[in-house]
Length: 441
Picture 1 (tube, rainbow, N blue to C red):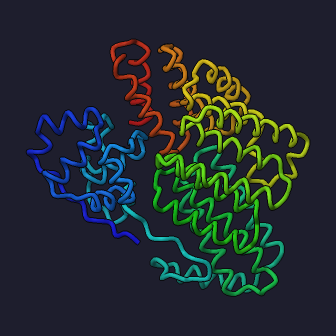
Picture 2: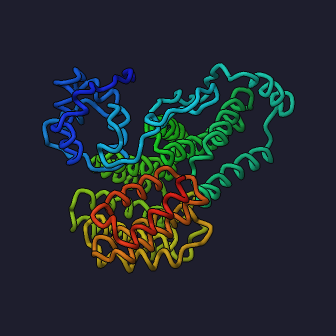
Picture 3: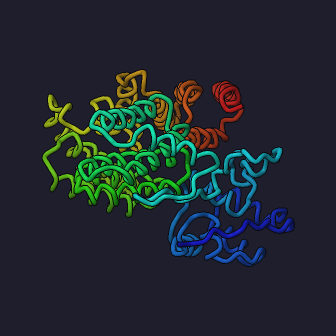
């Protein structure tokens, strides 16, 4: 396992040089990495450790064989190398803003958190937790079928709350729930052990999703790996596919579409071998369409979209047969995701009406999803030069984010703001920036 390197401040003369500022302004990362190596003595292996990337990926970027365009990865480079956010066209980074020291302060987004508990492994609990655990032991003593139903109902409730308000703030509750279910496994009978492992897999996947939504990708990977192991142990093919498609989405955010494609294709094979579940297959083919679009393979993307729609037609009237975690994928989601896949291909005129229609149909309770889709609608409108419409859609996303905690969607909105720079004096942009200040403080 790689060891996180301590942060080093870049030399002042490097930060002040015209060559460095120009490279940052153009986001010329091959040049940036070379300057960091020559002027600061930070070599590719150290860059990889600081920026949470593999050494091979850093080498490919430094050699110009691979681009680095996704805003979340650029933020990781800014944070890892301590490049001031403004130099890369980002907002001020958290470490640039001094704050009063506090023992209760949460870790920064770039600080690795402890690896999650593994099944049946007990770590030293935090202060006071031994007392709570003792109470649990006394109160529960044994697990019952009704207790399992209650625990699973709580897990399902997390998904509904994620739709409404984002997953970032759910992390403590989900991780605590996972830890509790894990501890129950120490004292339950063999009769309930399989059910508890299945529930732990769902909670580990939810924890991975929550950390992903919070842009804490390293911790998200650890929890998703735990979820994958637990679901493989349970031979739950559909849930294995669900974990793999979540890993595929994260690979896309890590700017690794080949890995994203491989993971989702494996998910399709796993689900196909498990049981005929058309709604799950529709969701998985749409995830493939996203990966194919990132690879600019138009034919493969359209084929995957067609398959997603074909399987969805097969699923009509059978939605309640699908696992609860797949039922969010309704017709509105199918339509809006089709538009997003086309937008990723660069087909903005075709994408815009689909995203707008999906957004119109979506349930008002899915605030985080609606904010994300409003961002994509704004992006397609901006690509077509419709500045007024784009800013109106972006303001809708901001209005939704006012009641949603999703750093991932927030990062998309900030990226959209950067793309408005050429129009900084236009009235719609000024109004959008005013709303942005009100929402983000």
